[in-house]
Length: 555
Image 1 (cartoon, rainbow, N blue to C red):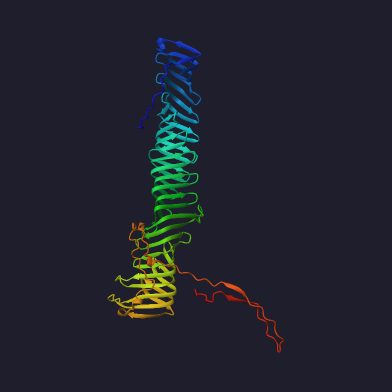
Image 2: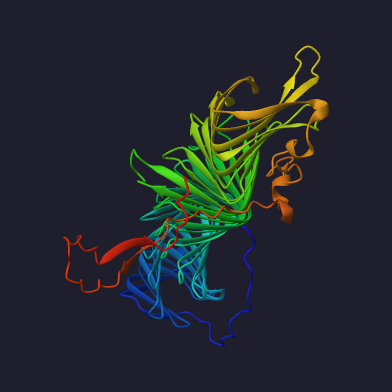
């Protein structure tokens, strides 16, 4: 049932509530045929408390202060309200008009169409109960039951409600609509189509003039495979921009990823998306989902609405990522969908099982949603923790390349100033036989099932030590660091930022530059004496000398 109408104080009482007959072309009275009715014909005109009422014919019940009106019934109240119908019954004591058949109620710029309308002048209220249509400023609102307050310009509609605009279509069971502000208030399960977007809400406001929505109660906004849900969502279909607050979830089912946060925004025209405040990005394109946390995520879309569309995601600061088989930490990263590359900046660390990889910058290239190869740039360090958790295979160089097949490493290259520490294992009983310390300009390692099977070196130099005779300074590389205290433990641990200890922070290597050359003038030669033999050619008046005699670095 529709909600009970709130009663308001009655208007001040008027002493004279009688209906006055102003005009009729014909009047007759027959007590036996029409009982108490005066039968009026032709251009009938009544006045009642400031209202003017017209019709073709009427039965006037003077004793009960009421009348029935037939044909072209019209009622005018001031210059802002008019009521038209084919039939009406008017009670002057209750100030109530019951209009039937082809009813039209006009109030300023708002028009209500129905077949059955009761209009209560005492409460400035009209309500219909057999279907009605309200037209306001280009918006059309229909329902089975409704009411309209001419004083507050507020309408309430119930049962099979539809609100249509040029770029907007809403269906619901209960709706308030303010004809003065053109704002619709959703109070029940509602579906909205606005432009290219679909909205589900059970509580919200929509301005049909500005196409601006304010949605509450976990409303859902959908657009071309993308879904945004939040405690509150603000959406403007003109600019295509939506803002969401509180436990927000932005899901892209096409690219199979989710953005979570307490604040998100999305622009359907440009494809820009942003999430912050407990922000999390979830990639579920692979068997195991990847969970990534950062202070802020931003997604930029290029060549939108074309076949060459691609996206670039930026994550910053304090990035932590967890997947069952891989974990990572860095200050910021960029993922470029076009090149399928993810670049990690500032102290990036990646873990895979008992393997740890770090450097100044790590670039990971994907193929078919799985890792294809990785490039570590600057102070590259790879560490494998052995099964006894005490010994470590270690490799460092200026840069490293790692190649993968089906997500497992098959080959790794260490370039420029490569140093390796690795251990010989007896396959029979898994005992340590020796430790090898080797330096080489280039190393290539080959793996099978994540275990190194062979190694190739260019001009290697090194020493193999028995396990009992390893020098203390050869057990670990100078830049060795095992960051197990930083590693994310599960998908919930990505929120717990743990930085490196101060003594273990990676110090960026200062790249030396070529010395700047300057032009230096030589003193002019002295005037030669009279030669006794041919003079040698004079030296050049200018010479090029380096300002810094230090030789250029071989990088």
